[in-house]
Image 1 (cartoon, helix red, strand yellow):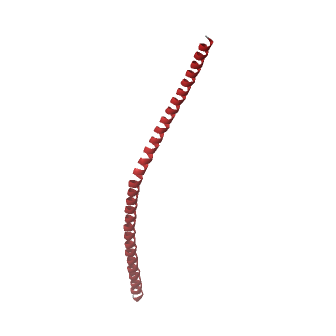
Image 2 (cartoon, one colour):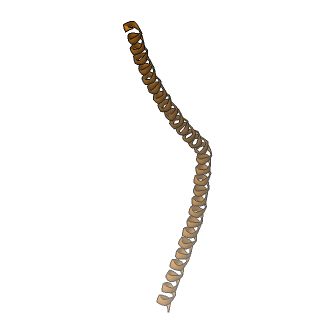
Image 3 (cartoon, one colour):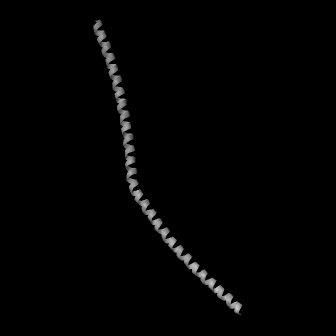
Length: 106
């Protein structure tokens, strides 16, 4: 019975150590969960702040692109008008020269 009593004490000691290890592991897991929650909250806060900064910047960029496209269209239209006016001027000069030449011949 002494042998059994020693084995029982050893098993009781191992059980207590196991319970202690389990409690420590549980405490570590709870701390890890708390830290993970803090990290996730910080990440969400940072993402929100980044979005608050980036949204206006992206909006300004989109507006600038639209303005650039508008100006490019206006420049193309102005160029077309200038070309048209140059052609009309050249036609007027040619007609004037022909009329002047006809008048000189009479």
